Length: 255
Image 1 (tube, rainbow, N blue to C red):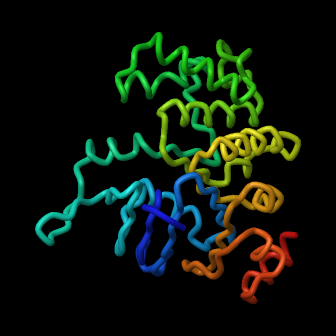
Image 2 (cartoon, one colour):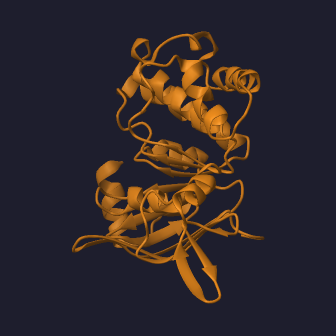
């Protein structure tokens, strides 16, 4: 790893009541790198992802994206929470795709895609529509621009959600189990879209149970359990020759 990481998480801790979900997580992600995060349910994977874009406020440690401290400012040796509009500005640079598609049901596909660029970034509707057309073509849905979400399959809706996130021109994309809510026959198209983004050099952190995707697309696989990073390395090493018994046990169950 060389240069400034796109993501630098240091000793990140997060607690929900008496339950400590993240117990001091360190993670660096280089520009253009694809990192796949694996682990059992409750291991802290999704919480870590949500801490990266400050959907969850960390209780300790720090998260930097492209050199900028996320959710806080540090001045004169003092740390303060950023105001809501400042956090919103930071989130504009970080796209996120969730398990559920969360499309606006009363808007067409193209209206869903242009909503944030026009409303948040202040782009012209004409420019945003042109960009939306390019993105919908990229995800294989150019012919669905005028459709409503209810007329799309789950896989198509998820690809619209990806296009919507890309419309904000993010420097980093976060995927939180993007195929877990899909029927098995719909998973492939979504993974193919994500593979294309990886090939184009987009920095991505992907929480998933799709081991095949991790093996084929990831530059690095991170295995989490119990709120900590247990193992990290190239896919061939972590998936085929893990050094930690917890990793071996998990992979033995899912493979």
